[in-house]
Length: 110
Length: 121
Image (cartoon, rainbow over the protein chains, first blue to last red):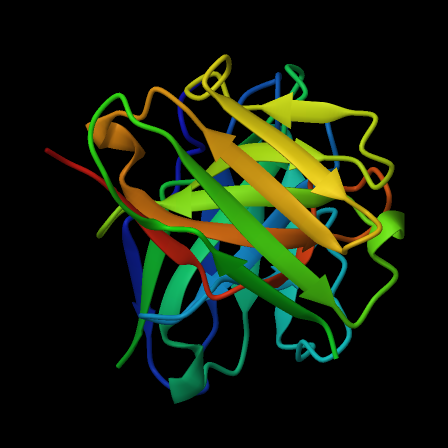
């Protein structure tokens, strides 16, 4: 099964908003609300930012939000801060009882 | 405080075997699913395997099915990944991750720092 499709890179200035898309198929993103988003600064372990499409774990700022429409999920980061610069990955449960990740998106804060 | 500490990584020849361990603390281990996720050098994340909190259910990526085996010891708060018939493409940092429920291995709220596995002759 191919990875979920994410843009390789996005960028924004401090204070702006950016949205990262994650496109799958009807066998994964489109059929299940089991989409998560992870933040991974260079050289560190991933950190859960959003689970089940739009839920934030405790401690994650409300600047981070998630949504889904059809086969595409999205992560929006508002009020960009320098500390948000990292790689972001989406993941989805699949109809094969497996988990699939996106290829990752590098967020640059200008 | 939740802590996950992986060990067992290292250099192994193609066709060889390795057993990774993940020692967990700070939560009721048997109540949570656990997963292994890997990341090849400079590449993205790839899910490898998961196991339910009870250990009764296991799941594998197609790329490792038949070669890797996940298991857990709830009395010792540890999860393992036995890796056989290793290939060069298995070279990666392997992360242990905690699920958010007994069968919720699709959402992982804590991750270890990873252990590097290098498959090379």
